[in-house]
Length: 186
Length: 105
Image 1 (cartoon, rainbow over the protein chains, first blue to last red):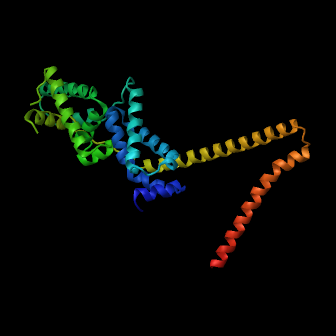
Image 2 (cartoon, rainbow over the protein chains, first blue to last red; image 1 turned 90 degrees about the vertical axis):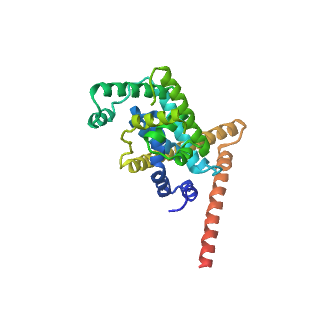
């Protein structure tokens, strides 16, 4: 089917099939990036972001000059779109997700220990939400969405070492925050 | 990784071990349908805008020329003449291309 740049050139000439192939190639990474920014409470919104991003790209594809990789351009648009949406939905009630069900189905220790773990997880989630956007996104991509450092770097549009340093810095910050709240990380 | 970082690392792994969400299987098809609809809307809008602009400019030019004292016949020639020239040039180019293609065959 050709490289991204060949598909982009064809899509610029009005070839819908070429654009469809670009969507097929990049819809999952765009969705994962949006989810990593919005968090698990806003998965339906992340799907909307993915759709809106591709509609935007389709409208603007003629203006894409190929100075950067198509994927970098696309992920930058997705990142900005998700961050803008996050600012709007921040005060809205999050959707109930299937995490509660997942946790209930997972066999674990006794109720006391479970409550303790839940409390610590809650504190951890709150701490994560106070981190800068790129750190939050890096943590969710790496620990939740099973994204390797290399792919994470591509999605965030930074060199691999920078992606590693985001994770390192985020872990350091979280360690300090949890300690302040009286939780041990051991 | 430092020991304190290893601690937070395993905590993050445990706490974030949840099902990974994915897009619905028909996402790409739904999106392409929406792309088709939106580009049709855009084409219609562009055509409407261009027609509106064309009509407005013709009427404005006619009124200005009439204001300068030209009669309607001259105004019609001034407006229709260039349009006819453009159309004639387009047809001539198409005919030349067809002749060249025929010659190449």
